[in-house]
Each structure stands twice: as structure tokens, then as C-alpha cells.
Amino acid sequence: MPELPEVEVTRQGISPYLIEQTVSELIVRNSSLRWPVPDVAQNIVGQRINNVRRRAKYLLIDTHAGMTIVHLGMSGSLRILPRNTPAEKHDHIDLVLENGRMLRFNDPRRFGAWLWYELPEDAHPLLSKLGPEPLSAAFSPQQLQAALKGKKKAIKLCLMDNHIVVGVGNIYANEALFAAGIHPQAEAGSIGIEQLTVLVTEVKQILAHAIKQGGTTLKDFTNADGKPGYFAQKLHVYGRGNETCTQCGNILSEIKLGQRTTVFCGICQQR
Image (cartoon, rainbow, N blue to C red):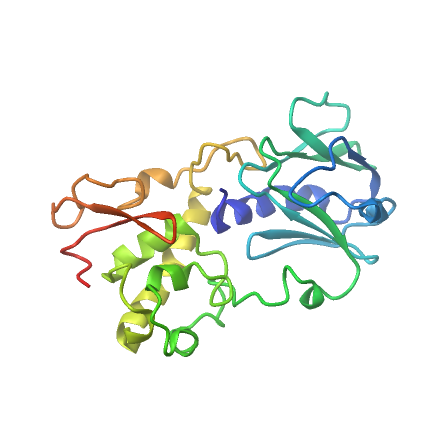
């Protein structure tokens, strides 16, 4: 699944082509996505696009009439193409612009979403209860400590909880905990402010670096230019179970935590 850096890279890639452009047509070839594409999605036709934003892993295409909410799901991607480019398999939606370009949504597994909403974004059920953005000042050691107070759940699961902080998916949770020297199974509420300060710093640095590198290379992800991300080669633990630790040479452990693969070093991340 594309994680926050991949979604942010996509936003950066498509924004220059969409902002201040007028939508001439919305072509929906297959409306059977994670949630059915609603008929009101056509309300974007005739509207000028004011902005393209990201909230967590959702892309928000803003107009004066409302906003289109796009989620890439497990395998979705967005491309900017000439409007007459023939559709291929899994090209489900085209957002056609008056300038002759279009935004094409491709999603082989159809776990993505294409929705329309006309009220303030904070009122939408998908967006209303989200935690702070990890790269914002709102995500701080003090905020994280308050959110974790009294929690006995594993810190890795809390770090991936969008009610606590958004967008820190499995890859980057593994990497940030390794960089901070925190065991992924550590009881969240027991972690002190000093360690949380290091953790918050590492989350911010790792995500920012991943965005700069163009997103992590995943099986199903390509960014808006059709080029894969290049952060995968920088990973220290994710996907490296039973390999040697890059810091101490110990064999990395691999377990399932919350049904997600978790890799850590038993020496560098003592519980």
C-alpha cells in the first residue's frame, strides 16, 4: 500500500497540472471501488480546481463547489496524461481538463476511493477523527505522550493508529522505532518523554527523507511521472528479517504484530 511519502510525492507530482485548471469531464469506467463512486462526483465538472492537498493518505482536490477525495488504497496510482490517451485495463477514472490534459486513476485491486464532499472537511467521517500530521508542529513529544498515557498497547501499533498520528504506516513505523532504539512491543504508556522526543524526531526525519527521495519503491506504486520511489534501498529493518543489523551485526527478528510484519533488532531495541 502506498504510504504517506508516496501519497505526498503523488500530490506534488499532479498539483502543478491541476491547480487553476477547469474540469470539462469526469469519465467513470468502473464505479465499483472500495466504496461506489457516487453520482455526485460529477459535480466537479465545470469547476476550477483551487488546490490539491493531502490529509493523512487522502488526496483532496478542492473547488469552490466541494472537494473530490481520492484514496489510492492498496494499488492505486494517478497519472497526468494527454486527454485522448487510450484507456488500459484498470484505468477506472479520468478527470479531464479543458487544457487537454487529464488525471487518470488506475487501481488493479479496486481498494481505492473516489468520493465527493461539499461540507467542511472536518465534518467528513473519513477525516473528522484523524490525528495530527506527522510533519506538522502539532505532532510533538508532548502531544504523543498525552495520546499514549495509560495505554498498554504496543508502541508500534499506537504509532500506526491514525487517531494518534496520521500516515505512519508499517514501513516507516519499523524504521522510526529502530532509529529511536525502541522495541516495537514496548508498552506505549510506559515510554518516557526523552525516548518519545527521539521517536518524534526520527518519524519526522524519516518521512521527510522518504518524500525527498521520491517515495518508497513498492510493487504497485508509481508516482505521477511514472517513476518509482527510491527510498527502499535506505531501509534498515523493514523487509530485512533474519538479515544482519546495520548497526550491530545481530540477526534481525521478524514477528507479526497486529497482523503486520514487524522487524527489529533485539540488541539495538531492547524491550
